[in-house]
Structures are given as structure tokens and as C-alpha cells.
Length: 192
Image 1 (cartoon, rainbow, N blue to C red):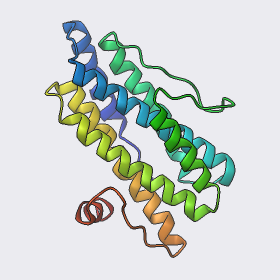
Image 2: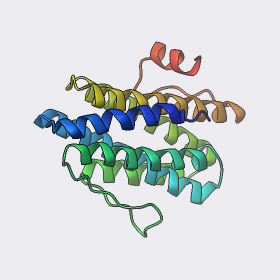
Image 3: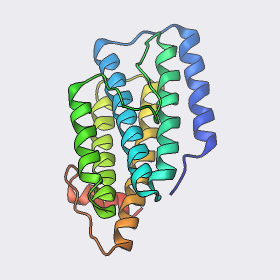
Image 4: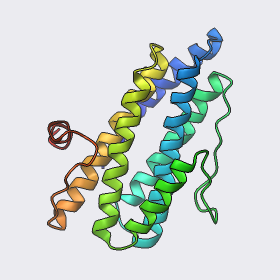
């Protein structure tokens, strides 16, 4: 698994400090996008935490740690805009989400991912595809450099995670077929 270089996170933090000092505000579309991205990252964190508890394998172990950092990172970004994002920690008896859609995806991911290791890895790849779509949509509603940078960093992480799930599936002799991404976009990501 590739980790996001520390220098990128430090660079992002300095951009957010500048944004906070400027007292900028978010549009309704930007606020909604940030909330959706946060919910998506939190969803991935809870799914990977649960699937790691069931199967005890990587990439779930490594990626859940990265997702935890992503959620914290997004909380910091939101703080810069005086936006309070609902957060709860994995390991609680139940995961709590802001939307019924996230709850449904969580339940479905755990149900399908509990069947076999291969099904769990496929669910992980599916969630990373969904994350890439969410991030693409979020980038479309802003011109703020700090948000664009944040979404780019998270997209890089999702691409790395998708590569990790794909590699692990190949170890099991499985060719993953994307469900959300175009085949050519998927191929570009896994061949990087």
C-alpha cells in the first residue's frame, strides 16, 4: 500500500491555516460537498475496521488507519470554515452516519464482505471507486484551492487503495471488474 507522503499533508495543513486566517466561507454546494466527502471517508473507515475485525488481513488493516487520518484531516478542514462535522470512532458497538444512504451502504458492505475474503476485497475496491466519484463531484462545485488540494490528496489515497485491493484480488486469482468507474479510467489507475 502506498501512503500519502507526509510533505503533502504538511503542505495541505499550511494551506488550511491560510484559509482560516482569511476567514473565508463556504457556499452551500461546497458545504454539502465537504459533508458528503467526510461521510464517505467515515463510511470507508468503519467498513474497513469491521472487515479487518472479521478477516484480519491487509489491505484492510493499513487502509483503515489511512481512512482514520483522512477523517481527522477533513475535520481540520471543516474547522477552518467553522463547520462541525459529525464524527465518531471505529470500535464503537455501532457506526453512526448522517445519512440513511451511508447506513445502507455500510450494512450492505459488511453483509457482503462477511461472506468471504474475496467478497470483502471486492467491497473494498467498490468503496474506493465510490470515493473517487464522490471526490470528482466535490471538485466540480468549488474553485477554492484548499478544498481542491484536499480532494486531490484524498483521490490519490483512493487510487492507491484501489490498487492495493486489486493487487490482493489478483493474489486470489480474481480479476476485479469496476462497477462505477469507466474501464479505461480503472485501467489507468491500476497501471500507475
